[in-house]
Image (tube, rainbow, N blue to C red):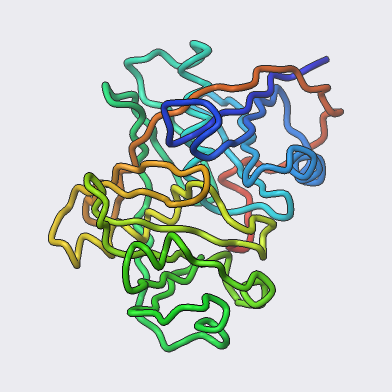
Length: 280
């Protein structure tokens, strides 16, 4: 017995850029332990696991070290696989049941559009060792249920940042979003994302971070529709539309690997809607 396994570059229109995610299409319920082991084996920032049911797909996301409650690029990659393989017709939305509630992805002319919850960051005092960990002076420090969000002086500072990973590892959050107003033509803001605590020193393109970045920059720029560039070495473009308590994230994806995975033995497991996990 085998199961389909894909590697997809998300938030890009060309291979070997954007953010790679593994997508595993399960044909039966498997254990958390096996999913975590496969994610460690794939050693990508996220491995997505899909299991179909009558109204859509259960979707879970694992880093090499932990399950997370929200991931944008692996959701984009998952929807891309479902559309590309014909499991979902092009004119129908993909409906996912996840630890962050129902998520919907729609195929548009310019790519795929994900309907995610807005996860706004609230201003907070300087976290212990945050300035030292970044090696740069923040203009703003905020925090939501997952991450710190830090605005830096300018785009160049974000692009040239070399944070202290050992200090970031000690911060009590999933990760650190750093951002600045865009100075490059075509981009409203730039960002980077560091999450060594969950096994991702720097994530190439982070959809879930834009659930905070969208509302943040909407308030400062007075625009509901924005374009962000995540300035990692691989780089990626994220279209962001803020709609009250939701954020529409748009991007493209490219399949780079199609393969088969030896299927594990089936074991009982709760469905997504019945599962519980800590934020990461």
